[in-house]
Length: 436
Image (cartoon, rainbow, N blue to C red; front, side, top):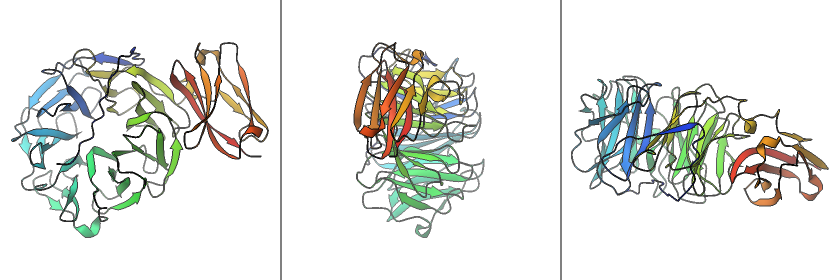
């Protein structure tokens, strides 16, 4: 059976919720994690649950009151099932995708009465394969993606709400690389476009609801668990959920071409969510000794800290500036986090150029960095990193520093990343260009 990637790593930390509130879900025991989110609206949220030890679980967990209480509905999946994806269409309609611990394969289940009743939409689809996710574009049209069977990816389309299915022919899909698979719930949609990632670092794209596909090799050096997220039809991100180099590949042409950005060196990028209303906005969870959550409104140029030192798998989903959820990671008070803040383009000191300035930029001789006192604590420092993430220089900061001069003569021509670290967490990041 294929390998499932689930990032779970805990350590004793001092928790800083910041703009999140922890809530219990009252799972039946230890080891249950809310891992797949689908937000229908601020009041209605559907959750796909996994267990760290592989215990079968086929309950649909959801709320109809914004998390004040949670409903557990049993889905009558036979065998030894586990959830691979969750996708809601509205407050009453949701789809859960399952595979089986013994035989793999897959099935897609639907409710249209808020979880009271469930029907299986598939029969022999995904037999001998593995179902990774299903996405409903409308009540009638949707696409399900599975691993390669008979030499090409199994992509199933429906035009009648799942009553009938059509497997996409091989001619419409790029051939798989040897050993290449899709990943559970690792996909993103925007309008009629859909993208999914593979274990070989490829990003598959369709602009017509899954009827025709192309693929771009974003990462060529390793085989890992990759994920993809788009904030508009053109702007997106692609990253490894296993590497700790903190790199993100970004695109501005819908995924045709990609550039690498050292967003968070030393961190594992866990999950991302786009946010309605922010064409270059992403909420990002990372891991470095604990889970941290950031928001960027300008395509990773700068960001604000939403949560630091949190107990979480990093799985998250946002639909707008006030509605978002983050997975917890411990039975009890930390099973799930509800976002209670407001995302804006100028709200954070880490996301506004009016408070932090680098001038001149580009620099030929020097640049002055003007830092507001509120960003500096007793153990703050300014880090200068190369574009691939390597640390070039670390400069300690204290409360007396308001302006710091960087000597551009010490650096070769090129692009650098300036980070301000405060209380062991990045609070500011911006590009610095040296051009002699």
